[in-house]
Image (cartoon, helix red, strand yellow):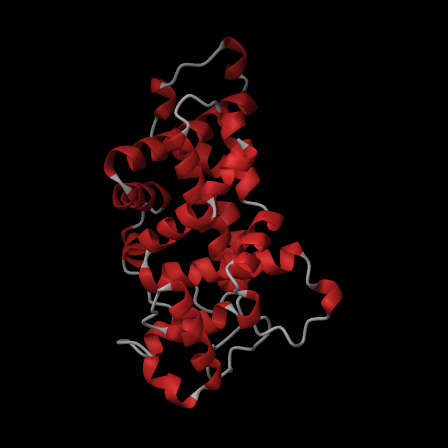
Length: 263
């Protein structure tokens, strides 16, 4: 929705939408309180609000499991944005600025760009061809301004998106794969995969380090978090260009087998 907003501003907007207070207000508007079972102590206002927020999250998960991602998205649209004009915006989101710049793809840029020619080698290594290869360039760009001719910015916004994507995919995988595990155990399993060290290791083992544009970053700052951020930005670029299925398949291959070590 906000193609130029920076990572910090996007994080603030997301937090306001998904915080417990907002979810509890949604639950009250939907009169969910009439349908839930609570212990006596949970009727204290603070505990009740927390329980209502949890119910909204659980209902969203139930809709997703029963009807798929599109059904869950429709539910979010209807409960988060009552006004019809906001629902129209949510249902007709603009493309990424790099996609808007070249609606049918930008691979014609490869011939005149050594940077993109290098990234073609990465595509061949992964067996994945981008429609907008400039998205891949942006995912591997550490510092750039909005006027950069190739990427129109750095990878911070993609990193913001990729962080949520990997959490969603891993949450879904462990939930389905371990049907008898309680929330606490599922959280530990997810954390074992969605952390800086694991993601940095995956990024390195895939041979992606040599493709990043990090000449301006001192070696002392190139820690696990540094490389994990690139992994998240890369996954977001795959999502924006190819869709969620490609991201799920990738996580199944490069992340999920590592549970053998942690489980």
